[in-house]
Length: 535
Image (cartoon, rainbow, N blue to C red; front, side, top):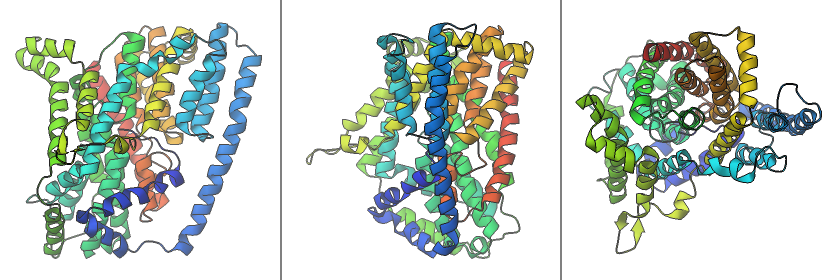
């Protein structure tokens, strides 16, 4: 799910709230103590990097606040030949939005609202046309899935699942199997909930593991790699399902709105899940513990078992959340799965597709968290609206605003003009050259700005190029959306990276080297997956 990076300082500033929420649960005592036992850098060694990062953020934002309006004015004053006046004015607004997104001159969600709002007085399109995408069904799928994820976080179901996996027989057989369990659990959770929240859940568990295993705690490289494994796995896992990360839903929304193509939950997973499996295998090889052997696993086993036992029996809130997640997944997958098993569309699958489309399933199952009680006598339900207010509404606005701008890019003819120019620059590219170009551009852009902003810019552009070149749009849009979720080299590239770097255990040089390797292998894997599925 969402990975809306707002800069290292702002992302990590939210961590004390997560830890405070966790501290109210007795089951978190072990990993809170683990934070205290870890040998984190002292304040004197970390003050200077923090000051440098803060100075960089300030100048980046100030420069963006100057350049954004300047680009808007210049493009309004100096028309570009070959485009309509509406497209010209939209290009000016887009320039402002892209600069503000890349520099975070104002909050990214505010930019996503500002840009469509400017299109109305600039007469790019009538207000109803500009604001209609804010009511897109995909937006409400986002909202429903966020409600479910917040219920999972509130009741600790995510942590129970993680500890259940770590206490399975054989998981602690070796450092590698331990790393594999942590990475796989992180990826599985991230398929269904925010990768930021997943990282916030899993990093304390990893720190507790390090504090209980002297063989790992004594090796700075092992400490860095296990934290990087959590951060990278959270981002990779989001590729597996449509609700795993915003670019996935952005691609589905644009394909439906701009090309009239529907991608089902199962269709996405056919591409996403094998890709996650390949990238996780590479990650486990890249970040594997080297030269580490457990001398005594009993202390770690006892600590994890104690932590799991402290959770107690399954609580009503956890049961309700697990039921709703299972129901949503079953309804999402059944139409495609039943057709695959029967060899033809089934009556039940057709009925579900007609009466309960995927967006409606997500919204209804998400809303049921306000209906299923945990204590009816005290009138307590699975989730309250005060708790639901904590979901990432900014990402929803960012998605909806990007969807509005992408729709206007097509309706004004700006997309066709951009597509023709890029096609001419590429020399009328073939499908796979276009896929490779889209992957490279998206990956590079995602290093500088959030994956949601990257997807809002790149997906409609590359769909336009594919249409201008008379090429299939599905492989292009899918590959670009997946590449927008990459960008692993810097702490500001993704929020999980920022959280990992904020522990003080990950040297920047190690993150850059490992992130570059994952970026390169990921680009190749996305291209190969698209070629195998859509050739």
